[in-house]
Length: 141
Image (cartoon, rainbow, N blue to C red; front, side, top):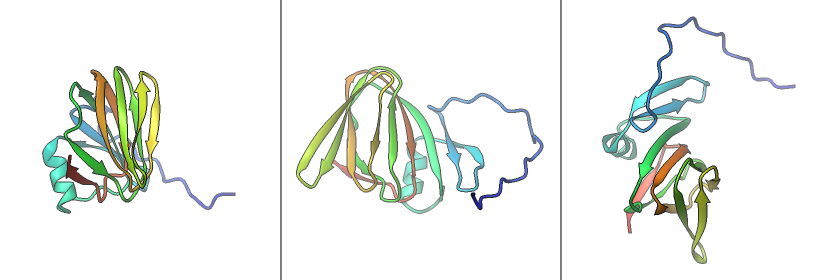
């Protein structure tokens, strides 16, 4: 039996609205709350500089037509990459060198925590990302 007690439901503060995961991230915090956050390069720069904090999972989607121009790594948690359309190769840097995982529409892979990775576009499409953003690091190619 679980010791987890459900949080009391809150009445709606406002009617739920649709939003675009390519423009706003969904933050699922450790208490189970879900809030949207404005995305983009400024978001990641502030997060990696420690100017803001989002404990829990971040969900976002991106339309990708070009290879990722840097490596990234998430030391605090694993990342789910889900190919919604197109074709991609996920490059992973391991102790024995690089390896790749091919993804087509409807396929996903979990990138282990602490593993440097990047995306190569084989056919333009959309990826969905579910990540533990805290501590994310980027490095040049």
